Each structure stands twice: as C-alpha cells, then as structure tokens.
Length: 471
Image 1 (cartoon, helix red, strand yellow):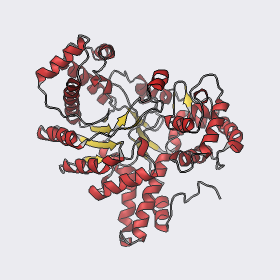
Image 2: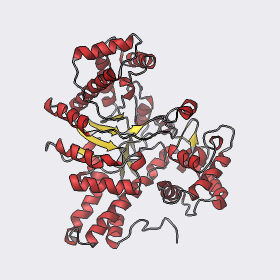
Image 3: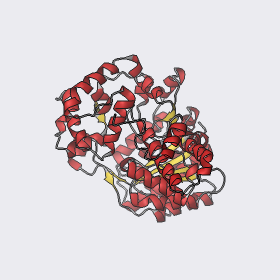
Image 4: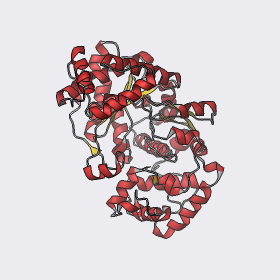
C-alpha cells in the first residue's frame, strides 16, 4: 500500500467521512504566500525538480536547507553554484530519509504524490528514478507555473509586496487571467526600518519616486504611503502584513516622531528608545490606514532573524538562519489594540505567533478586542513557520477552540515560495478532520450534529476565508 494512502492521517471513520465528503472538495484561498508574481505572470517552466524544490538562483526552500545542513551537507551542495542539480538533489534524497517525523518528510511525499503521481519513497536508492521522472514531467505544459496552481483548485492567492512595487506583474496577470485571482499584499516593513539611516534614505528615495511625493518629513512619509496604499487597493489588495519581533506601543507625540525622522534623514542612527517610539507611531498609522480602507491586517510576531552573522554576510536573509524569539508580547499588544479601539481604527486582524508559548496569549488578546461587527474580526492565525507542522497545527486549532470560535477560523495558508506547497492545505485539512472526528467518536461532540460539523469543516477549509477577505 502507498505511504500517502487515501486515508493518510485519518485515524477514525468519522474523520474519513469529514475529509472525503467535505474538506477535500473545497477550493483553496491562499491568503498569505511568497510566490513570485513575475514567475506566475510569465508562467514559469521549471528547468528541473531542483529548481522547483531546492534552489532557484539565490532563493530556495530554507526549510530544506536547514535540514540538509543538519544532516552534514556542506553549503556547496545547498546554495553553491559549482555543483549540479543532480548532485544537490542526491544530497536532498539522502537527507529526507533522515527526516522521518519532521514535517518535511510528509510534505515531500505528499508533493511527489499529488503533483507528480509518484508514490515511491524518496531515498538514495530511488533518487535517480524520481529525479528523472519529475524532470520529464516538468518539461510538459501541464507542469508550468500557472497549471501547477490550478491543479490544486486555488481560487485566490495573495503575494507579499513592498509599497514601492509597481505591481506590473499583477497587472499582467489581470490582463491575462488563468483562473486564479493573484492579489498583492501590502508589506511595509522597510518603510519603518530606520535603524540603518543610509539604507533607509535609499528606500525613501524609491518610495518618493513611486508615489510622486518628495519625502522630507514623517507627514510626507504617511502621505506617500497613502498614495501607494490607494494604488494597491485599486489592484485588488485587501490585506496588509507586518513582520515584527514584537508589538510596539510606546507613548509618543507627533513632534517627537518628526524629530526622530529628521534625525535619521540627517544620517544619524536613532537610539533604541527612538526606534521603539517610531515603530509605535508607524504601526498605529498603518493600522488606521488599513481600517479606513476596509482591509484585514496581519501581524507575524516573534522571529529572531539572521542570527548567524557569517552566513548572513555570505547568503543574505531568508537562507535558514532565523529562529524563535522569546519576547514578552502581551503588554504592548494589548496597549496597541486598545489604542486603535479607542480611536475607532481597529481593522479586521489576524495574529500569528512564532513562539508556541504565545498561542494562548495571542488568542486571548484577539478575543478581548472582538466587537461583534463581523464574525471572527480578531483571531489567532494558522500555525506559522516553525509551527506549521502537525503538533503546531493541532495546538493552534485547540487554542482557537478553547479561547474563541473554531467554526469562524479562516483556515490554512502556505506562507511559501514554492509552486507545489499546496498539499499543506490538504495536510491541514486531514489533521483538522482527524481531530474533529476523534471528538465525535469519543462523545465530545454530538454525532447527531454531523451535518453542521460537515459544514463547519467546509467553512474552515474555504468559506470563512472567502467571506472574511471579500476578494
């Protein structure tokens, strides 16, 4: 029997009925990913499975890179330019057999099965056969980028885009639709990164050119961002996203923020207290902007980035050298959302934590600021990054159930740069159905309510996201 069987991860009869009768048929809304809009617009044809799976130029799958390094694979077989695609893949095949109980083991075999129809176990003995079969299929039109997305019935996906982006590739996709909505997401992290004045001034020049506003003050900065925010909205954007180490809610005055901004423009590095105040003002003003536009805001909180200085210098960000930060988040988080609520500027909000200790903190924080204006206005987001594995998904769903309304949860996302990561939605749905099915069969949920439970599974899989985001 195939490892990825029909009832993979479904351990009871009710789970099987819920998955096959309800979850499996639902489309996907991938409301947070890092796919390249250019690669989508140009309908990329991948050279081989190594480019698709492991490394594409300087980018790649840092989940896999971390595993390979842990397996003793040297960098020349991971990001190096002197080794061949086959040599890199061979090292991955050796690594994956050592990754049993790591989610990569499940994801790898789900992707082989669902994308390529390959049900063999990847290991050194099968590596060459699988490599050649994948590459032969990737040469076919039905394995180009857009076709891979459509293969998984993706109704809509949201990329991650900087305010200075001209969104030319999104425009190209709008002009040449292929059946999946591809929408931008507003990610203004660089616009508040004042710690490096030289880099920040270069960014402001780009933002000024994109907006048509010369940025000489903090007020100018907000005006420029508003111009770009409006442009993003005209291109279908309905979400913002902020990557942060923690929440920021320092007290500040408008005069203080203008003084800090001008200090940075003069090339002086701001002090830690000034950075805290600036970020507090910036995030507040961005949140009000989102609320006025009717967008949903997302906060990804808790990464400690680029911790390996040598490797960061050699390979840059997003190369597998980030980890979990252990900040206290509740005091500033509550203060931040309270400030927005008092001003009437709280948008729909999804909170993601990277530290598992913060699941309950964030879920209770979200519930505190729900106001009855819409179902699930404030909610704990899906297991993210180091937590988008079975234990993290189960814990996130249990936390949402315990402290909120699981039936209103907007479901899973990929947070991925890969065109074939959509089986993660299937993975999530199977785990969800297994959890709920076990509750029914143990008597924790009434078997008489299976019609409602089936509808709940469909809602969490797709309907809630469709209704929540209003794409």
